[in-house]
Length: 230
Picture 1 (cartoon, rainbow, N blue to C red):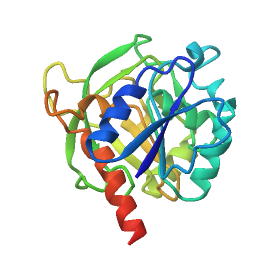
Picture 2: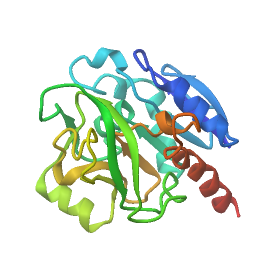
Picture 3: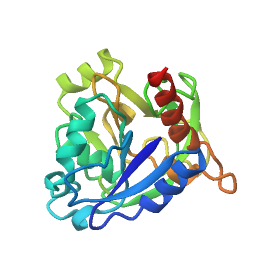
Picture 4: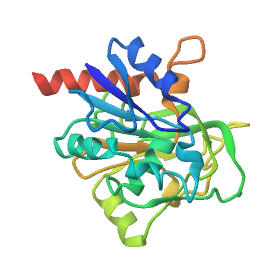
């Protein structure tokens, strides 16, 4: 499975995403933000970081990068598109996902583990998890508070498009809702389920030395691709 990992100016999590894909047997490769194509990729990841220095607001400039036209085509073709943290922000700015990312409620950058519940286990990035399973992965962001109109949030809830939700497990030093996101939303999908944006960083928990609860996000891609071909 060929997985394109887009490099924007200011991205800093693409090596982690590259290694996470390689570990599960995928074939990752980097694509520069100025590229007009994704080079026949089977899936694409928009990684975390601070694209264009987060000027204006997170993702607001990156959404105009030439590569985004190819990302939009891939999404329309039903192929897997994953935005992690800053990548989630870019997907929202590009209109591929609804809502927006606002400053954290605390007005501080938050970097800590969070517990999230798998709300939807039938996407290309969660099909190796069980619905309602709780996993612990880290976040690291200053603008991660998901915000949308009540109508949009009702549509997400009604359509089963919330993929991950922050939960309070009562564990010390683990944030329940680290940013004040509406309805504790940590990840959402488009109506078809092939485009997913998540604020937590699964690629930072995709190594046996650190814990591999996030690895299944990437192995899910491989499994989903195999099922789609079959």
